[in-house]
Length: 306
Image (cartoon, rainbow, N blue to C red; front, side, top):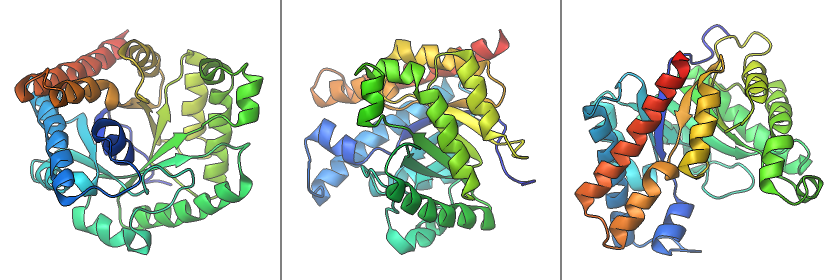
């Protein structure tokens, strides 16, 4: 496990959303977008990327910044980022699935080779008290990808979501907020332990935010258990409001082993929606994205010093 892990600060602007992006911003549901629609969606992703580049120009440290973008709508962006030396992460999962599977099936290796990203990222819904068969099938596929990444020297980023089962939600009083605060942190640790025990070895865990310092430490400790001394954790935004994300980042920045964040929709959604509705010019949408992303980067660096 000598080469396993990632310990540098990492501030990712993720915009690899596919199914949710199509449905919620453009109303494209239960079908593939047309060539023209694909072009339009790609142009909106370019607004996000231009916001990211403006944030770098405005002072976000380039050696800590990175993007996460998909191949379907972001091929040109991914190629430009690689040429510019920007840290590039790309997803390997099929969008919007409860059970993890590869976006490109058995050809996933070819697609990774084509773009050669810094990080290969997966989004996985895994609840240790959930469907055992689904969990096992997901782990089998994930182990194959984990081994491929380490064999080819790609860093492996694992985005773990632990959605509540109906029973867990009932035990939490029917409140997602209560589930998040009282049950999810422990379930996250259990899920991580099961994933590690199966032989799936992330270099970096991308995890939902946690509100208590104690729970945040527990998750970071789990990431590094068993000789995984350099494995890092970054916090995702989950589309929450800016206030909630600031709370999560402030806690995370003070936790040893948590090295950064990946906050997407909280940064770009309102700007893109405003532009689509004609309320914001492209230039203003770019500026708004840059300002919010830069604000989260500054918050992290300040919180870490305290």
